[in-house]
Length: 515
Ligand code: AHR
Picture 1 (cartoon, rainbow, N blue to C red):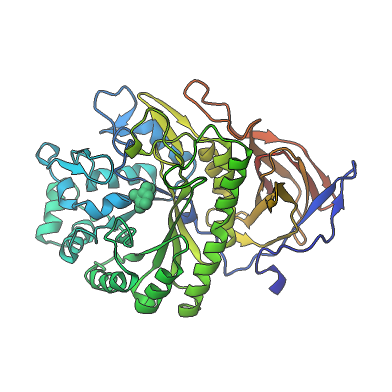
Picture 2 (picture 1 turned 30 degrees about the horizontal axis):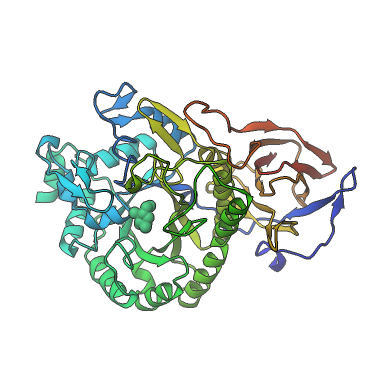
């Protein structure tokens, strides 16, 4: 099966021709590799105490006229349940390394007021803490992923939090949890040891951090029935040395995963570019920078392969997405941005890349779920809308925990000026019921691209497809027009024996399923 092990970009071999004579991209879906499953946790989310993500996003005031459980906004919860979000990372981000968990337990009126020194110096009243977060996860039917404080906390503080969360017996901390309303331990499993320890998490060197990791991780105990999956704070994009040093210094049995953060920034960190007003050059640059994540995954994985050839340690992309300038008139520290068709294409292409590297990428968390960066949901008082990125996660949920299928194809390019990117990207899987699903993306802003898909060895009877697209790459869902971009049934395909010819519209994400 060697030729099927990776998504291969072959030279222009076997191009099909459509009735009108346009060459079709030949795409061949290979047999499953039983060792590769696309972890559902690739579809994880991230929610930080930042701007209006937690406060005024998930957690609203008593007076807000929306369905609520306690102060958790249930219309938001219901929307997220529909796309099966598997995992939610909290409380940060940079906020995690300033957070002291004991501030967020006990009667709300007695919790201390702090300042969110990372995100706008705003008041943090700690009304949303451990119990509230875990209640949110339970309503979402998703697993919690907690990032512990290494930067300004202590190993003792981290150890105590874990005991409070996970110990079923009697101890002062477990009894305090009971007094605060929770009898059984939550058995939190995914545990981040710090966040961006090279930056906001303490400006550490990888040598210093890897020593700190071992120190903290030694006191993160597995309580009975509650083993931890510890995740080291990993690199900033291209910082391969960080991965190298951590993999060398931290024994693989001491970490379940190591993270990597990568944001698509069209301009510079000082001037990132507008979320809604951009030209084709910026569109192209955004896509090109998003596709760069595949190089990063390949290079970090190669380093990890050296120290962990059995691929036991996961590469956890626990922050990713497009980061633009904030919407005009909003607090710059709140990172509130709109979400366009371009961003949906970025999300879909990134998820295809993660799926195709599922042997190493076993978890990822989009930044961030509600009202911050590349959100799934935006809210405005009682109103809420689903972004184009939300619909991508809806189309891609079929891949969760499905067997990865390799895809061979030779793709056409999208060229702008002297620069080119691959116009088509794709991933495929076979689910537990034997259905084969493919998600195909056409990044070209003008060209319809015919794709001929062959599924040798899979005798399919029926196909069905859904598409997400719109007329302009700058199109958005706004509070005035919340349904401008949403999935639609797609019929522009035809069967040819066991093959299928799909006419991929420009700027589209397609989910096609075969049974
Ligand atoms: O997601 C916003 C911020 O980006 C996070 O707090 C931090 O980890 C990263 O730099």
